Amino acid sequence: MNKITLAKTKPTQLGKLAALFILVLFVIGCGFLSPTPTAQPILADSAFSGYAFLDSNFNGQLDDEDTPLEGATFYVAIDGVKAFGETTDKNGYAFILIPSSVDYPVTLSMDAPKESNLDHAGFSEVVMYSSTDPAPKFLFTSK
Image 1: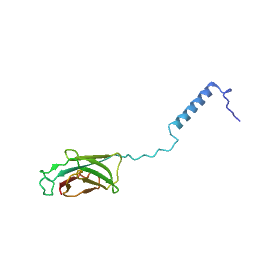
Image 2: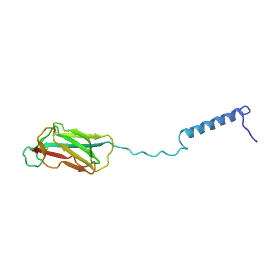
Image 3: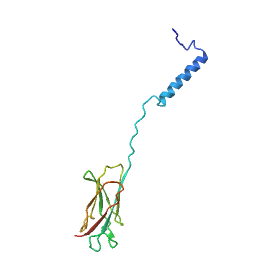
Image 4: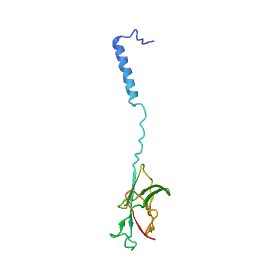
């Protein structure tokens, strides 16, 4: 029976054993023997925007005479719950960034500015079926 003991090992054999030991550690440490990791999906942020306008000529249609409406509240509803809201700026624009991807369809809505006497002059919500749908333009008029 052959036993290798370091005391009786020749220097060249010791070098070969050390090289083999280092090679084994390298192979194990580099993951060559471990299973391939599963790729994780990349989650992208979801962005939504909307516009609010005041129906200045009271015709119920969005046209060049209508002015941007500041202070309206833009909402994103996920699974029927208004989860995110943002107020429109002086250009009637609101933007919401959700730090994860969402499942479509998503419902977008806009409320008139608080303590105003405004009401929708058209639709009050829009259902988006993809991220490429255009930003909705909500129209408001006096009650």
